[in-house]
Image (tube, rainbow, N blue to C red; front, side, top):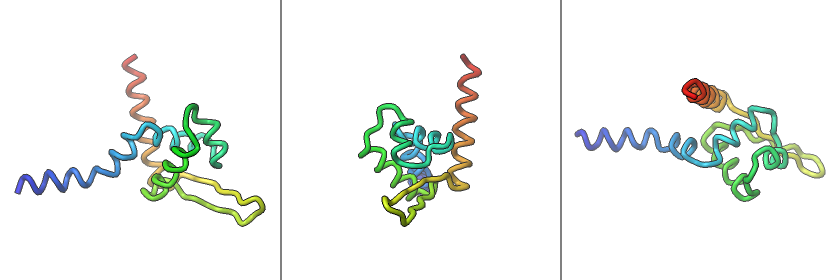
Length: 105
């Protein structure tokens, strides 16, 4: 019975681990919060991220329900990302953790 509870507990937090444990996810979320909404602007705002990794992270964060993707039918096509309410909550928690860490220094 305890083994089943541990497996269930682990499964409940897999998504969080994949987001927070990824080197780039937090940077992408924070850049969107700071006002970079288009992929090109995000790539410029996040030092060292490649186009491929950014695309992967944007796909994952959208799939996890942390970002909304809006595509505009223009020429050339335009795509913008915004935090969802769930993404806003996670970013607020990340900011609190950052503040807590800053107090120790």
